[in-house]
Image (cartoon, rainbow, N blue to C red; front, side, top):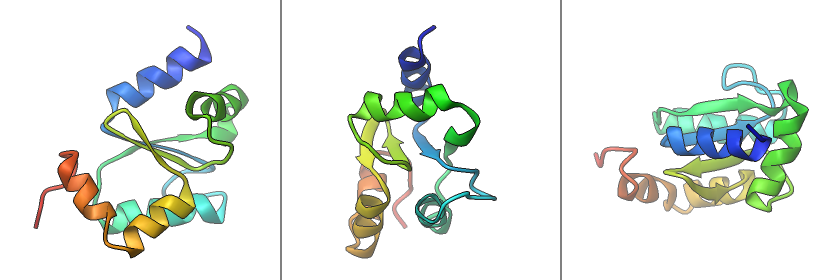
Length: 108
């Protein structure tokens, strides 16, 4: 299986998938930490991949999304964005409704 096939499988099999540096409990960069904190604050269940543990995934995810930076967040197979986009959506009150619309967060 190619790295692109592996990434496609991970994205397809998990409603919310975060490619990050480090782990949600021990982020290895500030940008990854911000996105994990936002998801944790919203109590979103998500899977993550530590790109520092696999250089093929680290480079492959950039090609997969055509996005040059990490972290990268996918919801229901769709690339949502990196840290700046997720942070802006959260601060503007757009992220929670988006996640509700996608069916990964219950409307409270």
